[in-house]
Length: 247
Image 1 (tube, helix red, strand yellow):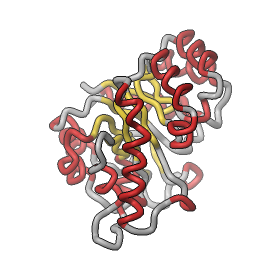
Image 2 (cartoon, helix red, strand yellow):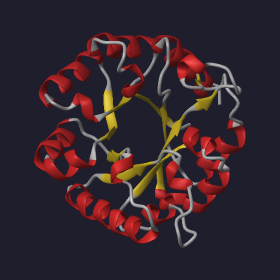
Image 3 (cartoon, helix red, strand yellow):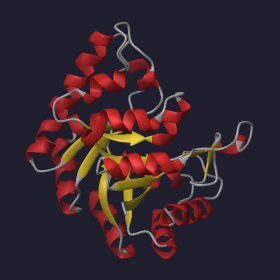
Image 4 (cartoon, one colour):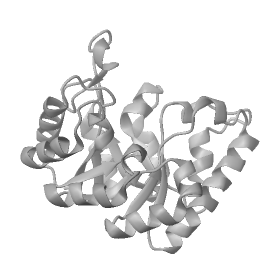
């Protein structure tokens, strides 16, 4: 059974943080995954996690935080006994437009992660859908990033499906490069439009059986539950956890 985390980004519209953490602990979570907007005051963030009895083995960090606030982020990762730091996104203005540009970006990721890897942490990239659009040489940005030295992957299953791709094929292709998976479900076409078309895990259209089997076969032991825009984060957290616990 994989360890289960909750991506706190899901609850960004439901402050305060203390209330979210208490809710998650009461529902049955033991781990969470943070995101960059929570790290302004690392001591306060750690105190809130400790109060709720929650751990943060993985977290999302903006590339600007990794590169520009290295020592602060290293100190927080150590204080929280983290295992992995993940860069989650690059905005459209900063995205390369060809394979050579993605090669340069991948090398930048590798270099940015080196101090964290040297300190004993895993370092990786979390995908959306744009990484699966082929570049001018036929390779996808995801392939180029995955080939970078020392860059692991947190594979977001929902975005792979949104990209029109087969998650099992990519899981098999990347293998041990995948150190965590975002478990995100998709509502039937035309439904949940007020939640951006996402669904609670197990209540959407994703066929989880083969995906879970493929993740188990490569030894991926961290499942991070996520929904980008739930109307009710407690509903989402509760139903999604129940689904995964039933696998």
